[in-house]
Image 1 (cartoon, rainbow, N blue to C red):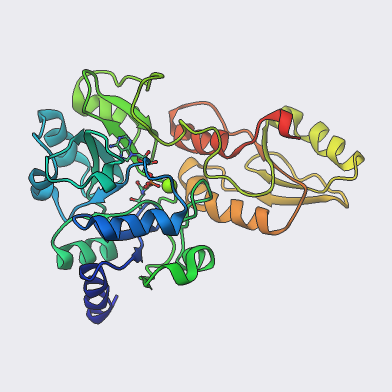
Image 2 (cartoon, rainbow, N blue to C red):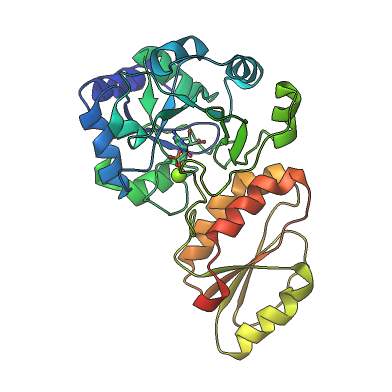
Length: 322
Ligand code: TXA
Ligand code: MG
């Protein structure tokens, strides 16, 4: 990434504009986190409800003090172990943190990304950049600069192109603001890796937990209805749709291809990391082929697939919608 690209991006951020940038997880839609007017532009561009809080990206952990009331020991430990990297921590916010950023909540989400372009941008900006995933609200997160341009186009002042995101799904979110550390969103960094550092188990979010992704019924969703189907039931399901004259696109990671006039077959990687890396690009591709239904072969049990399974469940529509 040439230096003048970064300088241009910093100038846009300083004047309250929007810059989309790559992270190791997905592309973010960034604005100066200290500027409420700039932060509001993010909500407008995404079509996101104002009460849905944003993550603040920091150049390094030394910036935490500006954004949080106090830094608990657990945050120090997790930051030391996993930052820069795909981990977001929810902490009690400092008083001067704009309400626009946190949806009026008493907490703020923070992360230090590892991608070299994100890092260069943050270093040059030398302050917090608020950035949700750079997609329309509820839709599929972008993992390439083209995805961002196709979806947000004119609404972004600049897109920094850092190629395809390596991890491909959003960061793990751990809430450290309550009495028990809680996993709000699974990601590449697993629950057990976090538990090992904390020396205690993570709680799962309860019904009264702060607003987190997946508290919404449909998220990360293609426009075509998506259904997750076990490997065992896949052939029968495909044939049932086919018999109804419906065209089905199938995303399989293990099942042998099923041929048929109404069937498009896509093979996903069989390892969790590769599957995650390609997941959103695959979902976009499946969506664009304008099939009547997307059938995703259920992924295996076990922690390695937790984050992928979470995204698939949220991308799926309920059975009644068919
Ligand atoms: O990997 C990622 O985390 C990407 C990249 C761009 O960093 N960002 C991302 O942001 O996924 P977003 O806004 O699409 O998802 C962050 C989620 C939001 O859905 C929000 O519900 C939750 O984090 N969140 C943010 N601040 C929070 C807070 N104070 N309390 C509870 N949840 C919060
Ligand atoms: Mg998002």
